[in-house]
Image 1 (cartoon, rainbow, N blue to C red):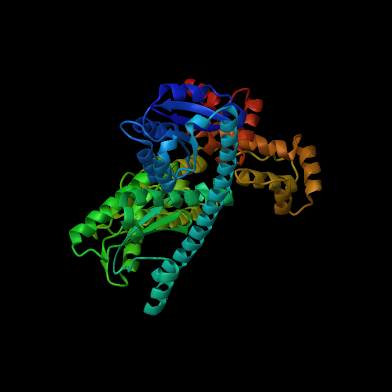
Image 2: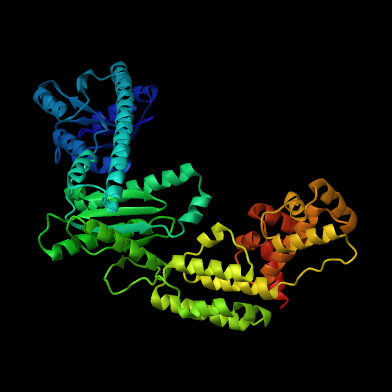
Length: 529
């Protein structure tokens, strides 16, 4: 149905038009009728009609001014002008301003209105096809332009272009700025590895394009024509950049004001997203190589998101990112064997707290923190997946790691291996007890002990009285129950740390084997303490 508004100061004309059956027959719905242009303008903004049928001569705002105002704001409304015989000069003006059709009032009846509306429907269908084609073309041009801009800025930041190449590629990409005085705003999703794991490649690409489009629109609203001197680029892997050309400004105060307003708009845009963003802002850097300096400053600032979680991170030169772990971290690395041997659980927690405080104080690079943790894991022979390391995006996450250490090194009761089983089954049981948190199966265990998987399956059932898969499930369930009782891990984390890669399967299996959900088990077990 085409949503239609009728505008005429004559009540009888509006009443007559509304009662004609041609509207419904042709697929039109009258959603409002008003008496002058001012009321019509307000209603079009609120109701977003497809069709406007308007008289020309009206008080307050006539049809000519109404058409002019509508076309300034929205070119997609189909406008039909109602006129009298002596309104011909007005009709010419209305058509010049963008009216699509006109009709004499005294010629309107069921048949003539139906014919008019049928023709308008065909015209609107053709208009929509043309608009769709224009939008597709615009998107293709923009995608091609973004690709050229992406390559231009990558080469600019790498310093591989001569001045002549820089000018040529800048023109080819449609970049207006000279970037002699430059600043960069860097926006990054710290949890990108986790986000990407949850999305398909197509979904990740669509999200990146949508965010870039939203960001561009916000900056166009803020800057108007000056937005031509801001280039928004997606660099991949959750990294978005705004490159600001401030070359036309002479006063540093104006440059800083412009940079601050653009950074605030970027921050506001990021806050509206479902994911956590870090926003790093450079100083204003001078010279042809200044943009490279600005980019590295902005990139350095987003590293502080590991420690600060609630504001724009401006480069001020005072804060620096430490590349080396503090002495407290190295001490824990050395002391770890003794802590484990003596089961010094409280000492481990105190040591982790000191490491976290020292890293916070020196703003240690998060990459150095993760690298240190990998060394610590290797020292105590614990394994983590790449996704588990990627999920460490805040300094507070080390507290969770410490809790994980306490559980895995001190709280876990080692399962006994029966003495009366064969050497093959003993090896298989040892393998299960060490690896059940990972995605292992019968074939993995068989390979580890050096036998055929069918033979291991038969032997395991004969000697243990339970199938391999059910025994593995029991190990994982025992671990899950312990985590639910003794830690504050989220139930999804409990599933993952117990070896279940499918949360829904975990919940279903847990309820079947324990006669209650994981949440109820945690609630009941803590209620008995």
